[in-house]
Image (cartoon, rainbow, N blue to C red; front, top):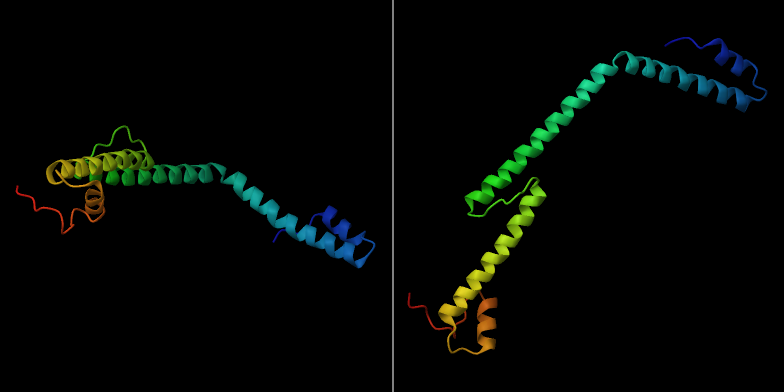
Length: 140
């Protein structure tokens, strides 16, 4: 460890009470390593900046790879990705498409299976996924 400066030694020697001496010594002990850290950072500033830049690029690549996985799944499942630049954008796009598909399935089922049924029977069948025993079997 680097020796204390004359100013640090004088601060300890000129302290009037024991508490002031302890405080001055503690301050000197903290300042010395901080000066060393500061010197190291200044000496290696460019290397530190480069490492931070590389970490940032790696993070961006990882985020892009995860977004690409979600987009490939979405396309593979028959959905479009819209203008999804982020995973959140893709999920928003997917959400409305899934809801639209659900509405279409229900509408198609009602058209095909529910002619002549009352609204309560239709609602119960929708809640049961079309598995209501009172529902007529599909002829297609």
